[in-house]
Amino acid sequence: MKRVITYGTFDLLHYGHINLLRRAKKLGDYLVVALSTDDFNLLKNKKCYFSYEKRKALLEAIRYVDLVIPETSWEQKKSDMHEYHIDTFVMGDDWKGKFDFLKAEGVEVVYLSRTPEISTTQIKKDLNLQKK
Image (cartoon, rainbow, N blue to C red; front, side, top):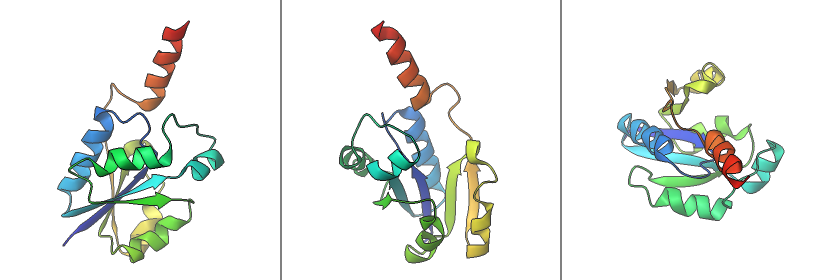
C-alpha cells in the first residue's frame, strides 16, 4: 500500500482544496491529511473561521481522505513520515523546495500546482469587501 500525506489548514473548504486532495490521493492508496490545529495556527498568525474539530469533520467527509491527524508544529513532519509509513509527501507548489529535506527520510516529495483562480485568502478578502 502506497501512503501519501499532505498538510494544511483547510479553512473555508473550497474546490481548490478538493482538487489538491483528489490529486494527492491519485499518487497512492491511502491519504493522510495533517490538519493544523487552532493552537498551531495561532503560532503561524493565522485565524481560521472554523475550529479544528469542524475542519477535521469536513475533511473526514471527503472520499479522498483516509485519515486526518493534528499538525501541532513545523517539526513534526520528519517523525510523521516514519510514524505513518509515508511514501509520498505532497504540498502545493507555493511551497516548492521548502520540504525537499524530507527526501532524506526516504519519501518522494511532490509539489502540485494550485488551482489558480481560488484561494482561502482571496475568499476572505472578497467577503470582507462585500461587508462594506
